[in-house]
Length: 214
Image 1 (tube, rainbow, N blue to C red):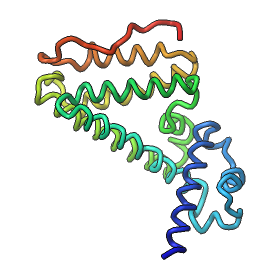
Image 2 (cartoon, helix red, strand yellow):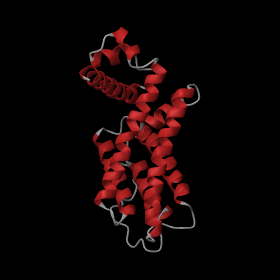
Image 3 (cartoon, rainbow, N blue to C red):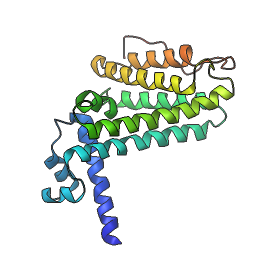
Image 4 (spheres, one colour):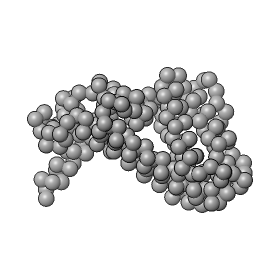
């Protein structure tokens, strides 16, 4: 039992270190030796955990998305009666975190979609699963908001969630180039002022006009 626990702890450490490096350097800029060195694992032991770098990267993708699902649940728990506000608070918290990181890194999913999405079937499938989990969680929150009249009903929750995910990924890519919060603020205004509101939405709070300055 202790050996299993130790192995799982080391596997998680590998995933954590891999996540940091993949986010900072991308798939092709990340070497297994540095990951293993940071995790304190001998090079020959890597294959006790993963059969290949590709399989490892796919596991990192699954590992990466889990905290975002948990954060959505946390914000919904804080605003159970107003899921639209919970969703807005979630994205506002992400923007504050990105600002604290000087707009570097972005989203691992978006980064890897552009880098290996069409060259690694294993990673493509992992990216697809992660995106669908994320989309489905947002769609569930939107469906609750639709039932309460806070979100428009002329489009399905799934369609609206797809718009959110796609626009967020685009805003993150633009953010990295601009090194500015302006693309993220435009996302907030376009989604929460223009795309989503239903008849019961009322005044929109916590939104800021997009600007070209940080």
